[in-house]
Length: 390
Image (cartoon, rainbow, N blue to C red):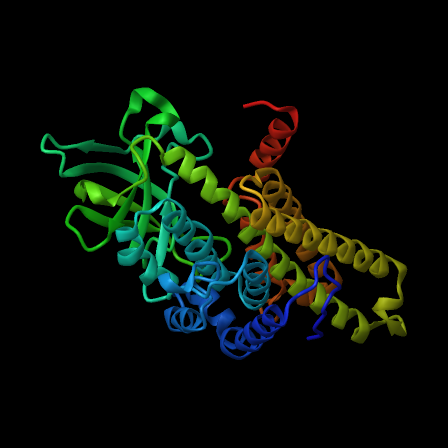
């Protein structure tokens, strides 16, 4: 497969280049050979994920004192692209650890919470999960039915309820949970908690049989009189919605990067195929309809890259970057679907076969339009911010 090093809108430091090249080499050597096998089986590639942790990829932006690599958002985007290009499932686990769990703990956690939980997740010692969605509560988080009730002594919260579509749910050891503490307050009544999965009252529900990212396990979580110590409350009571939305801004940059990686793999495979495949006495790349596809794919890929690096820079420079993150996630995810679809068309019957990874890229790309907020939600976020609506 050809490797493209596009001109980026920023100058990469030597550290950025070294990281990108090291991750690219690791992904080709350790992830690519087994990606199809894990996709077929649905098993979580924990051994490879642990190796990613040893490389610092599970806590790229987390300071070194808390087990991370202490790098910036540009480094995170570069690494996510390379991992996603090799296998989207690996990048999904990486995204949740970095963008959601680590981000929440570092930004909103106490020093004790950081020492006990952040170090373990950022170093890759433990897998983290972020649990917001419920069977009857998706984009409308204020309708969640799970409850956390503070006991009379004020020592712990008793949590009951069922969460759904939890990425890494079947294997996570540390979970950032959002649940209602004051139902009458709507979204202002949501609080955030750190969940130890080895405590009584916690159970993992059914594992979801998914279209794509099959080696990134997703499941329900069940809480049955789970006693959560008050010291595991993240932030103040009622801050959960703010924490969740702030984390999703960071998460959307990760998903945009994932979409770029998937799209880049599909595009590069299509370039190689168009140069080699012959039909009607010439390379198919000489046909204008194939050239049109290549042009459209390349343009959307590079536009996605520009929007995503712009969002990364916004995150590094400004406290609020919601619009930039949503634009990057929206455009890159839809570009990934377009590019993987065109890649299958270019490959014809071979693109539909599991002998090539094109059909896996296509299946994996779809989820980028859904999680961390659907494309429809991204459009609402962007428009409301531009119109000054709240």
